[in-house]
Image 1 (cartoon, rainbow, N blue to C red):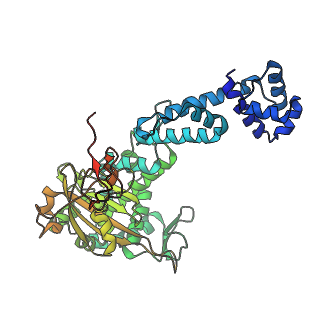
Image 2 (image 1 turned 90 degrees about the horizontal axis):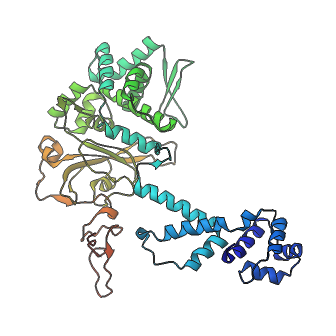
Image 3 (image 1 turned 90 degrees about the vertical axis):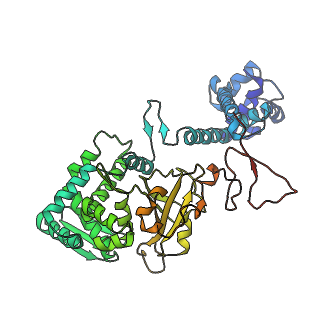
Length: 466
């Protein structure tokens, strides 16, 4: 048995049993001072005393062998030697002491390191031994829509069939949908106070309740969602064919997302909406007014116009809250969203919060030279109750600068000079002179000089060639 580990193991087991040194020493037939020396690895343990320890602590010899501490030591050395942590060499004695005297803390360190490696090496999810990956449901749903360019022909076809049967102009669609729900499905639709909810469907009672706090456009969308829930089940199943969600939660999120997509397709039929978008040069407010939908709903629809043979302008779509959390994103335009962490503070998305209800426009250029025409505006939902602030988000869209002449928001911009340099995030941006930087980039060493105060918060050196 390794002498260097037995003392710490004895101390840990004694403390886990809630025994004082004096009590254990009495059971072993030795003095408390001698036991203290053993626990501090200053006295060896005889075979006879070892047997007495197993009996007093009610453990077997394996528990006293120090194998658990040894395994912790090995794991800790691997963690602390990872060059990406940027640590100086940790003495062997410190590693051994941590494993022996604070095993719970050591195991917590190993768990944190494993989680960090998952995020670093496989940011799409956690790989099980079988090779199957478990993803966060929200990330899996985002990937599902992103991988399919946020366009689903099966849902478009189902929505177009229902629209043909309704046979009404877009401005009259809400009324026609409500009438179909009543006549074909026997639903009683009621607008009422719904504390804590916006929509509630009772299949057994054939009742659909909508919150009276919803604006007209949102009520219409919920009616369309309900109709697609009842009639577009096969189309949703076809859109998910061949895809195996990693969890029931992910499957439910994707299904709800597809039903939302189908509802938008019903209220804004593909061909008429594409024609209107081209006519109005993608002015979102005008599109929303023509189709009787909200600003955000019109933005959503613009990001889905990728039908083969009848493609619209490829837009990216983003919705972010005041804390910088992104809860919706699609990128038909090829904009490289940062998957984790905050985005660039110079991006128009964050500036839009300062001018509520006003459209903000920006030509944003990434470090690789990619340039996008971006436009953003705040949207506000109903407040849950008096005294509680209403939820506010910024909805942002953008397209490659080459498509700017097709978009009204590009009018009057100098497409060569009115460019703002942004990055994906501070951690991933190499711009040397950015005064808005919050963090230095990951792959650069800081250049610190107490004699010089630069305009930018950080000065750093380019990464060394590998």
